[in-house]
Image 1: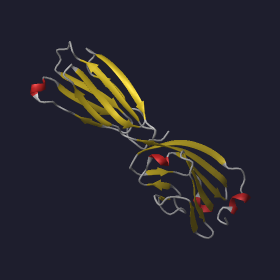
Image 2: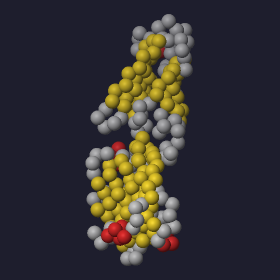
Image 3: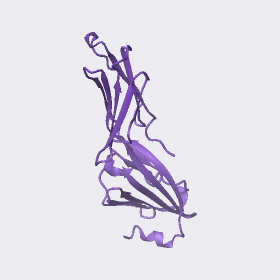
Image 4: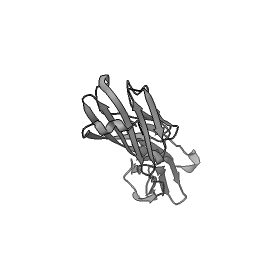
Length: 223
């Protein structure tokens, strides 16, 4: 408690906000507001996840002590809080989504940055076809939902999305190729957690070559 009392002497903080995204299983780094650390008094991270859990991570400069309340071991200072009070989470899980508030008290005043963390989950992609000439492209358990399109427009496609309780979404798109003479079919899957190309080729006896292209943005984006 003594570690947080110092904030009672500070004026109303200047508040800013940001959005941060990280891919599940990777390392996320959340920054504090830009403030001079030469006159640093204290730093407090207040963490509230979407699951309802709360966590406090604090540092007091005059005693050079840190404290942690109800925080998991994967939530730590990225380096020395006196030099850079950034918070790191490794590995990131879906349950870590929520608001991360960094409050810095300095000789110049109190500064606050609220970061909304979004966790991205890359989908598992499969591409199959049946004997009736229907090609199925499926992006399973992605977050957010993957977008599926087809390189060929000579067939009729339908799409369905299934929302799961953990916040992930499965997108399924079916393309009918019954009247098509095109022996090559490509489905394009777009997702912010992906940036790669994969190809699936069936044996010549299937008389149909399938490939899927995964497209996305670099993870860890800030807005």
